[in-house]
Each structure stands twice: as C-alpha cells, then as structure tokens.
Length: 77
Image 1 (cartoon, rainbow, N blue to C red):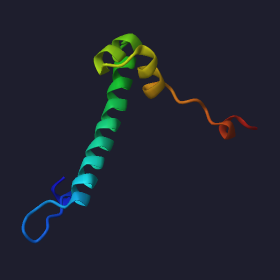
Image 2 (image 1 turned 30 degrees about the vertical axis):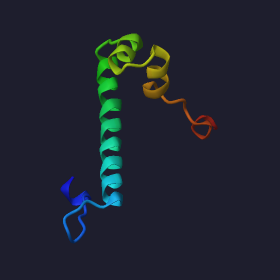
Image 3 (image 1 turned 180 degrees about the vertical axis):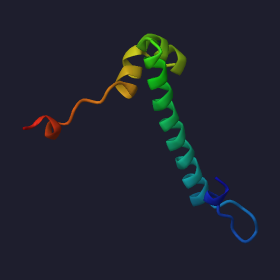
C-alpha cells in the first residue's frame, strides 16, 4: 500500500494519491467480501444471516453477492 501513497516535496499526501489508495482498499475489501460470502454460503449460511452480518436486508445481500445470471451469449448455441 505504501507504494500507492505519493508524497509532495514537503511530505504531504496528494489528494490523487489518497483517492487512489482508498479506491484500492475498497476494491480489496469488496473482493474479500465476495469471497467470505461464498464461504458462508458453502457452509450453509442463509441469505438472511449474511444480510444481518453485513447490516443489509436479505434481498440486498442476495442481489449484491448472489450468483450472477448467465450471459445471453453463453446461453446461445
């Protein structure tokens, strides 16, 4: 992460570097959440329990982390 944070000559963080670092952290956190939700589902956790743990509704958890619909191109023969 340190390489994402550029500093100006006087040691201050640049706004761009701070934004880039925050975006990288968010992406890593999102990837980890998808992974952990998958582990929870494999272990038998309900969408309700996952939603409760994430502080969202059952529907919101399922919509965000549930299986992705197959693309139309994949279904075409």
